[in-house]
Image (cartoon, rainbow, N blue to C red):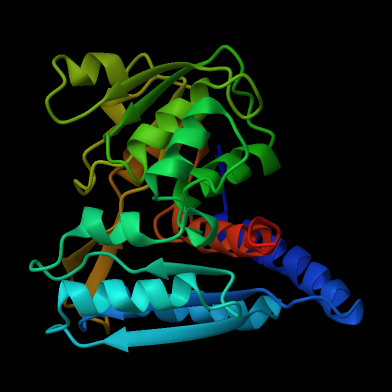
Length: 291
């Protein structure tokens, strides 16, 4: 069993990006700048955004953190997005999800300029991804591809089962794994909570990508020997033995699944760090998109 170490791999990517940024700076070019908008005071969201800001510092990017109160209206948020769309200093920006209930998420994400949409959520970018055209690939799926590539996981001709159909992970992941390139060239089955015979389908997977949001849903008896497992899920559960008062669990029961796996991601330290590294890669790419 090989552990797909996202933390180690993301640090390698950040080091590579730092070298590129140093060269840009030496040549007198524009230093990439990432902005992040957060509405409200969701603890997990603040943690994620702060991690992204720290990653910017590590690679030499400029960054801006825009914190807006939970009472912010949709119109006020859209005005801030429009401001960033037209800000020549900002190459890319993200709107941290989830948003307060009174704000329509789809309207907000559609308002982000496709050329600055480093999260890869805009329909224009999603469409390009589906057609295999150059675009911003959503950060989490792109991070997964990078992890498979760097660990040289064979994907051609494999049966890839994706569990979860979200627009952020599951759906784009199913498209990317079926495309005619590496990593890819898989036969893909996209499943979800309403899929009949879900366990039977999962047992046929040679590559299993799980983004369901159900802690430890996948157990050892549900997978075949030699499977590659990508666990995208991350859920906080109460744990009084921890200083934080909680621990993080993935969608996969690691202890029972790992012994049957050829490759597997841990939680935490697997897909999460790769998502941030991919966001940095997209921000660097955004400089060319906005020329």
